[in-house]
Length: 147
Image (cartoon, rainbow, N blue to C red):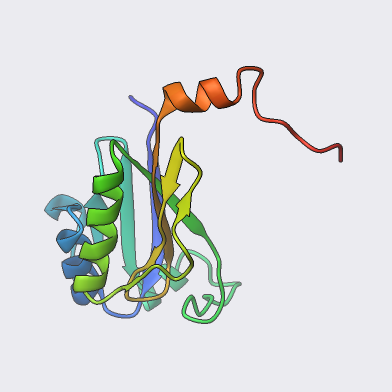
């Protein structure tokens, strides 16, 4: 079996969040979806599980669900093949009811990224990196400051 990642996110409205993620190009896997949850496939190896609060809480009964509209609990970076694709998904997120560009777009020449929030305030950073240009910029690897 391939290594996979399942990002589990609590949401207030499973149906509305399902529609939001479909508008961004995610594909709903009906086999693992119902009124309490939707499995939203980004790729064969990456799935965002959007879970209604009650269902999500059943996995972590000893902790309170963070209010992601006020508190940041995770930052999810998605890679794309072009700057245009980064721009497109950010604009799709805004059109589907999310918030685009919650901070200034980042353009480092070899890397370009923007940021958006979903309906519940979960933060995504779509990014494009020109690996050839990045390797030229950092031939010995990125410079790190001493700890």
